[in-house]
Image 1 (cartoon, helix red, strand yellow):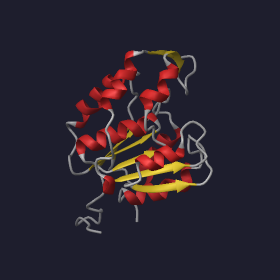
Image 2 (cartoon, helix red, strand yellow):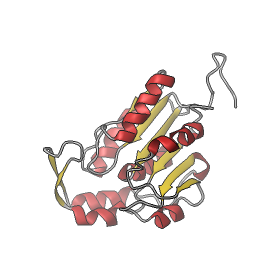
Image 3 (cartoon, rainbow, N blue to C red):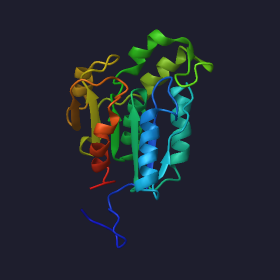
Image 4 (cartoon, one colour):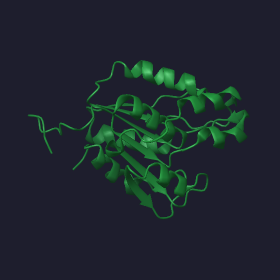
Length: 205
């Protein structure tokens, strides 16, 4: 793989965006684990995991506003669950390398049952309202297919208790797919799969 004069992989991102899932936050253990690895091994990489607002339109507007200042050829995006859907949208708009973890394929359908007051997963004392119009916002964001399969990696757990792994596998069939036996929606064994996604992003050998 090509490297800069300082030994860094020329294909590795200098900026990495992580998008959390529904009811989640930057306190997501996967985001925290990734941030810790980068801090130890690749401290030069700018890592951003924002707290996303409940409105999908507002979430994407906030993200895209910040991304305008990021390097077009040295950035990458990751996301889990609803964040995987968002990451797919961002990847389609930017062409960046994209990693999705148990991504929501049709969140407009799946989240229609969750309209109303919700609690934040990591801080249950915090509540927010998931409004009916957010379903239409999700529909408006949806992309018909993975825009750049060769630049997309999907980690899909067959043990996902919330989303159908077959649906995920079908949608990302043309992309790089790591199909995981067992595990769960949160991908609790994330550490086992972290090296694979890091290699895909050229962040480690």
